[in-house]
Image (tube, rainbow, N blue to C red; front, top):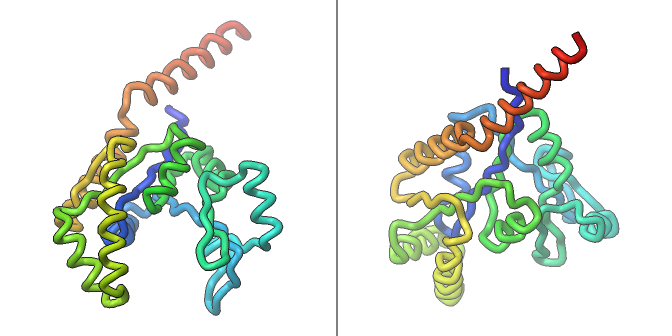
Length: 211
């Protein structure tokens, strides 16, 4: 029997494309997946739990993690750090669990440098007009911010070539179905199976030698 390691899947795309919705729907259907818990320096809010919502760190501890390269990616928002701890991800992968990381494009490109063996999925909007409608429908963005987000989205779409797969999110259920197909496809890749098969052959040879 194959003792298969898990795979790190990175779901990324422009703001407003629906990453959170797709990831949430996916997790409702695929309960074996693990969500990558981020670390942060912000204060714990009522009801939040350590290791479930975030790993809560002091500023000094977080900066030590940066210095020791213990983060797959990190960023600073409103004077607080947020990042993805490498140790948690690697532990889950060793246990054979697939780990999902839902992240902005810049963060995904950081992860690609530090963890190139990950599988990178770009969630693509049906059109920029539809993306604009989704951002506007939130009701939380000023006109100026909407324009800035769309400009940024165009730059991020140009980075699509850095990804392994592209999924158009014109229908959430269809997008989730495609992501599920990618997960199955990656586990069936010859390179992954071959690696496990060679290990089985080596173990068998060692056993025969001992006997």
